[in-house]
Length: 599
Image 1 (cartoon, one colour):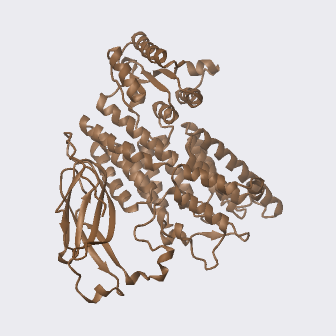
Image 2 (tube, rainbow, N blue to C red):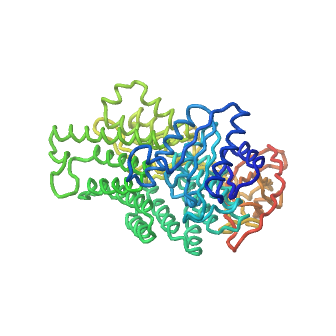
Image 3 (cartoon, rainbow, N blue to C red):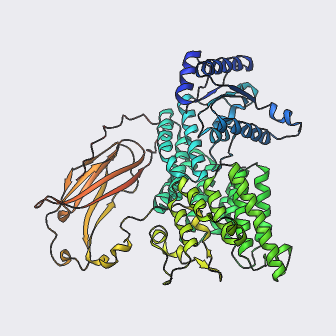
């Protein structure tokens, strides 16, 4: 996607729109900007035979008759109207009157972070053309940023939306392009947000160490440029990393909330308040009912549907799992009787909350939240599950749509029930830490009590984790390839050292004899160089990896026996490269992509 900071000639804007399908125009008086948008829309619509729809942000409240409508509510009305148009059929949509600062909004981790973010979210999967007119800077907001920087912000917003939807796979390419755009513009603030979102994406994918390293870097860069909301978001994501081990850190989440409040970031404070409440919800005596209600009010104030949906989800989950106490010092509310009637009322209240969460996840286009809510609703409400004989297949299908194999594995577990030996199935054991899986519980009816933290990530299988078929071949009888990054933070155009070792298990013949003269062949599968091309593990093979751009880089190492020409093992590694730290950056031409030969 692309932005145009000032009106260009009609032909150039038309080409831009046809190539990118999104055009943002600002820096002109209202009449000139509107006429220009109309001309571009007519040209594209006439040639493609498409209808044209026009919205003006200022009119959204007037049409509803609600004179006191807030700007956020008016913006939501525009997004909802556009969402219906975009999804039904291709068209040309003109949205005029967007405040000048809206295109420069910081991605805050929610799909509703700004009007422009909401439009991009609605527009993401459509075949429509979108033209956005930004009001003149003289109206009080800052002008649209320059072309290169604005394009980077649009890419960051799209990446944040994909993460919110629970589809981090699609965020990686967008973040790589965003880093390059911000480097071209010399925008260190934009680069800091790109590194932060990289760290968030790694957390979502279960790559805890990569996430921790990137989030620490992002936090320091935010501090360097005085970006207080960003620093608070980085602290919050670092605190959430602790939940992966099954041991949340409420104190760190409380500190992140205070940082958001000091920075004046109400949406960030609401999210930190939610995760703090979730981290403590299962503590005896904690007033979870009151806290979830407070969080819901916070999200309502900032018109954040996604945050409200997750609040309802966890509130319903807590209510469905509680014994009737709510930590307020007695038998208050609907769940305090502890008898059969109270249990039934709690279940009905949880059902209502799950249904509300489902509706909001649908509106926010968040399949990740929808799939988890469908699963928990089915497990906690047998009547709901038995009404739909294909309940498991339906939920599995939603997880599959976003590539969440871990989510599918939880559905498999719920359908199969506890294993006789008490061990978690392979598809979960290879993805989650043992400490988290140890917190998995079961009800008397044989329903799983899935750890809350399981829905925070979509972890991939750990490399080298023994498969069930390997049980007849004990791990100690095999040799493994171990890769070690000897330099902490790889950056573009600076070599980083990688050591390769062949490590035989204690039952392997090489454990008591010297390694044979094996050859390790290294290949870069991206814009990077690696040399030497070959190394000998017995002599301590070390390679120099020189990336030419930030982002995720894949390397392939092939271990061969040169005496027989046999390939013994081939492994691939993924290394995240962060932007260089100092000042404005000059773009670097990427190196030619080397050919990757298969052994």
